[in-house]
Amino acid sequence: MYIQKDMKAQMQEVIGKISTDLTLSADSATYIEELYEQYLLAPETLSEDWQRYFGQFPQGDQPHGPIKQQFLDLARTAHRGQNIEKTEVSPEQQLRQIAVIKLIAAYRHRGHQKAKLDPLGLAKREHIAELELATHGLTQADLATFFFYG
Image 1: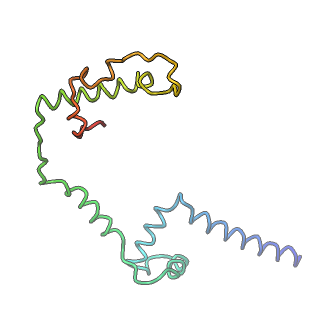
Image 2: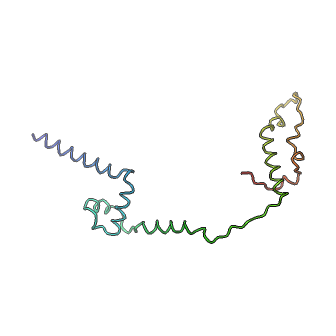
Image 3: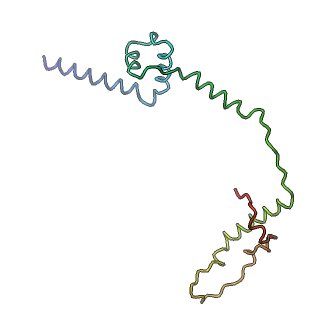
């Protein structure tokens, strides 16, 4: 009989620990965060268990709700009132940009044919006009220009 009572007490202790662990799982993080917020504002409104649990934390923490709200408000209003400068791109610059994109595509598709892959020079290499700057209306000077390519 004594052994059964001892085992029962041990089982209740284990169940108590498991239930505490389940309460503190990631699924209940929002709930616990709300309880902690309540503890910071008015600890006496919580049960003694939660007061004891949160009392183990370092003192001096501030309620997080107003801080979160301040960041949300800042995010909503941060971009208001700022004018975005519109930059004009000349039609000539647009055509050169398109030419660069076409040249890049040509190198992706046929660049292996221009590459020096035969160290002995035995294979005959054909000239590929598609890989030349002039074919796309570009010059050597365009190599020093920065072009945007997504």
